[in-house]
Image (cartoon, rainbow, N blue to C red):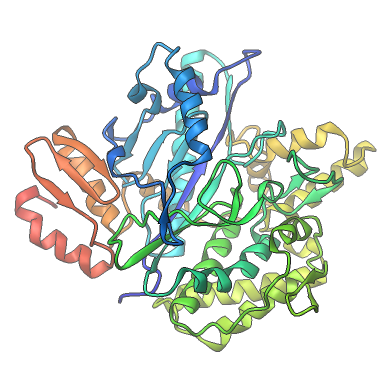
Length: 497
């Protein structure tokens, strides 16, 4: 069945550090980590010529991006290194359809395109597992647990690295319609999607003592922008659909956090997909417009009750909890938006349960929402040790919560002791490490990596070029029926199984 938001994806940049060196180079450490990737892959074959980063969804092309200057600076530094551009990128397209590469100073894992929220969460977990295996192999090579990798969004030194959720949406609606419908929701979804942060870490924000909801909130500076490394927006306007440009847009959201809790990931992506489906089907009513949405991102983040008053365009006020409740009611009034009753029922049910629990107190969320898990854990530590929220050790604990090392990561420690419940079956994660999601074009990409690895000249989300000159175009392979047709049509040419 064709649905309004047929494909989903997550991109995660991981923090990396070499603890046995006083001044380690994250570029070299990321390169070394990627070289340990155990999965079958196409190496250094990414088709950068197909990237279109300067097209804006507001209808124009940007001649220059601030990130171009940073790119030039990186390139100037990189020319001093004894490596080629391709060696430093270490680009890999994996057998499970994912992309794994060095994004300058961070290893980045981009999940394959997924059809369902639960598939996406599973593949996000598979990405963590692949990173962890690379870390294990790298540390074995170094002779000690020297390299540590963190699934978070801040290093507490003023830098932020992103976790981007992506949604394929129809182009027939004006871009302004998407913006009006989404902004109040995105400002306030950190009530359950925020991964929590101790204090502040931005250069242009007021100091704050305590625990915030969101790690990226201090770094959001504007409503709309095509930029991703400066002037970070609530809604990114890059027009790069990785699909037919006359039919689709790709909504590329950069304001979200990396979640250790797969439940929180599922709720974040699921509610967003459901709101997008309501907009696409033109069943969403006009939401309560915020007068100061950019400032409200920080206001919301710094109030863990969800009850801070936000100004509306009509002069009244509204709370983040009320905004999320409004969107929830819209979803309940217009069921059947996702084409998957089981998924939609779970999203609506858990969305409602989470908002109701927050009304009773954040302790009710401490079994599944990252910021609330941190609140309980850190509060207990503060009381036991006689500390305050301003003590630097709290920020160290914050980082360790996101450590992928199961021997050190605080999140994994809580899993191990049974204080948190597993969300994705282990066998599903293991399968996702080696297999792309069924019914997606990523399945075709993964099969090609598996069976035609040595014959591939270049590869991208939208197609594969072979060394004999053949080209497999994936641009229009969006829905499950498209995948089935493509597999049937090309099974003899490529010997698909």
